[in-house]
Image 1 (cartoon, helix red, strand yellow):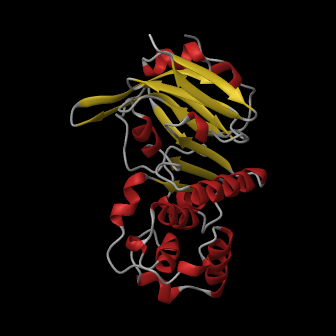
Image 2 (image 1 turned 135 degrees about the vertical axis):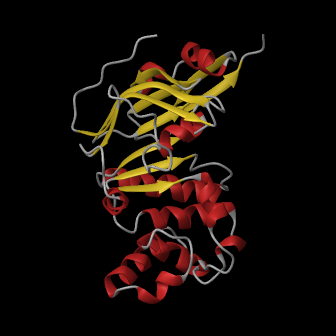
Length: 270
């Protein structure tokens, strides 16, 4: 299955011959891809296909196998300072919630985005500018009435919104999101969808993983399919989100339709 050619744009991430092993098991194989400004990209694939591992290459929590034939560049640099990275890319990963220690309030959690930790110690060191930014994010993500509550006592949707606010404290150019819509109630899903579209309209680009076709953002203009650790297709949504292509990806007969701006997938009885 060939890869669709995309209009040439300014590249911010470049992967060349990237291979990733974890516990001696190959998770990603021969990844060759460029991500460009002006693209909002969804990554689709079955469980265990390597989607989350691919995202973790961006925050350097996972490193590929080094070879003279491979390279991974972010903003045209193979080596980038971690603080520069945090100012350019905001991250949301599923396991972040488990890293927040007991007693940290929602406000402390957002403030910790400035320090890169998951505790309350940075809150007493905030500058006036940082406090104003936090207050703005709290308002934007509709968290005003729960700022003093302990993070670990909040609902899935409230925690997700708080972590996204945290990811935005440095006003990054890029957001990397691992299953941002998973387990959200209707209100949190609506707020997340609305705010992400607002960010996209203000020139922020998003790369995200989802398991639900219904959660694909209407502003998405690129789809990458990963299967068994390999990129098997890459192109515009109308070319990729099709019944035959997704049936092959997920190994199930699907009828994929588009209703308005949203996609739906229905199993076909065999």
